[in-house]
Length: 202
Ligand SMILES: *[C@@H]1O[C@H](CO)[C@@H](O)[C@H](O)[C@H]1NC(C)=O
Ligand SMILES: *[C@@H]1O[C@H](CO)[C@@H](O)[C@H](O)[C@H]1NC(C)=O
Ligand SMILES: *[C@@H]1O[C@H](CO)[C@@H](O)[C@H](O)[C@H]1NC(C)=O
Image (cartoon, rainbow, N blue to C red; front, top):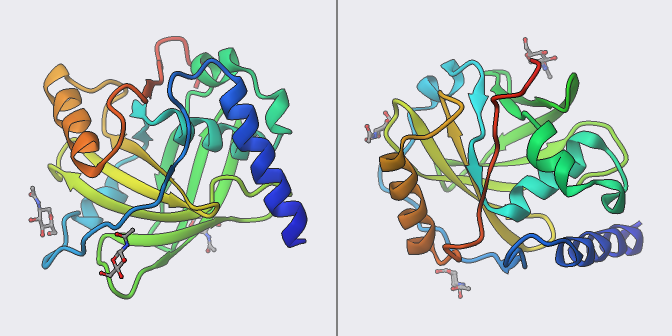
């Protein structure tokens, strides 16, 4: 079991490196400091319906796509990930989150809040054979109005980030804030990608 999981993760890592994602090597997890007061207004976050996912580190998108598609990583094509993902997130108060995309697919995740960080929770995929996206997510920046930035420590020890947004695109101003923040946390500025929702069917 453990062997096969680590083997699968090694495969993901090598596939990720084999793709032309620029600088998409996974960075090891680093420390996220615990804020004295919550950063994120959870009530606001769970009222966003749907949460768009316009900008993220390439590894974050790739892992999300493999997980939602429940496909062998080597069968997940770059073009599919960029243009057909159309991923939207739904955060429910009962501790369930859904990722929906790829023209009708849905993936359920179970969240467990962290005891020592009000802005963190661990999450695991519910059912399915491939659990590539599981990890711990920390919101580290938000305006409680239009977007929130989440740094994720994946189960394999890699770090990634993604932005949840009330709109399918971010303003240039917000994008700059988000990228500056990613860099301040230690992420590589060039290693991000954007999802386009223009051609999404639903
Ligand atoms: C993370 O923080 C903990 C507790 O402060 C410390 O023991 C550990 O060495 C830190 N790890 C890194 C990678 O900085
Ligand atoms: C967002 O909401 C949280 C929880 O109410 C609060 O602690 C935080 O200061 C707010 N941040 C902003 C930027 O409004
Ligand atoms: C949580 O709520 C959502 C939306 O109502 C529902 O689809 C899901 O099955 C619920 N999950 C659990 C574990 O109750």
